[in-house]
Image (cartoon, one colour):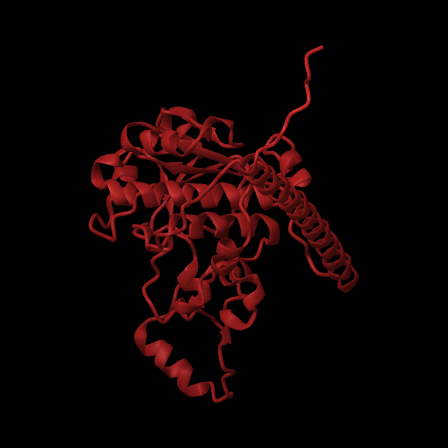
Length: 327
């Protein structure tokens, strides 16, 4: 009968021993990794329980994010990023635009009641960049190659522009608020307002000057504007919305009279204004700083919080570049 036993040479025995040790190392390493993962899960659960006991507001879980859709949201306010301005931007600015769209999507997904988020005029370089980062069509965002004025009725369109003389007082559910998708470092200042005027659509500016004093130019990124509108849908409070989103470097301070009606009467003539100041001898309180609550700074939080699992960002570049949106 044929002998099926195998006689190992010295070399075979050495290879076998190496393989056995590697296999043992792999098993031990896999067990150690599993243990660390289990400990990390337990630590997160404990941290979450403690936060709930303290009354802290916790970020939504992945399960919650998957079910937190625009269709189920009670917020029907539409916010649109107009991406029909490719010709005014270079490749790097297109990349920054797409990253800011991703940040807007991330913020909207984390909101208890997401806004109705549209991205219109998707074509050319912007479309190519979106396709390069993944299956963006599966995001909970209304992407379309149509322009915003083809999607919404003219009477319901409000284009946000710093050059507008109209002040945005509140957000209405039947309106569509357009944010110009232009990242050009103010090389085309006033372009969005000019386009809105040419198309004879409504326009308005954020009431930053009515509520805040700022040490720097009031230039915001697209995702900052989006986050301010999103925060306002939750709080119905402009100062709180601004302060929870604007970066600390802006040095924003709430004006003392910011709680008055935004439709207050126009300022008096210079002579009357001066005389009224002379008569008012009451001491003035120091302005309230927007940077007192660092925990609610959306600019810092956004870089630390994980994004929804369907988007991956390359954060090697500075995504906090200022877009052509000066309010």
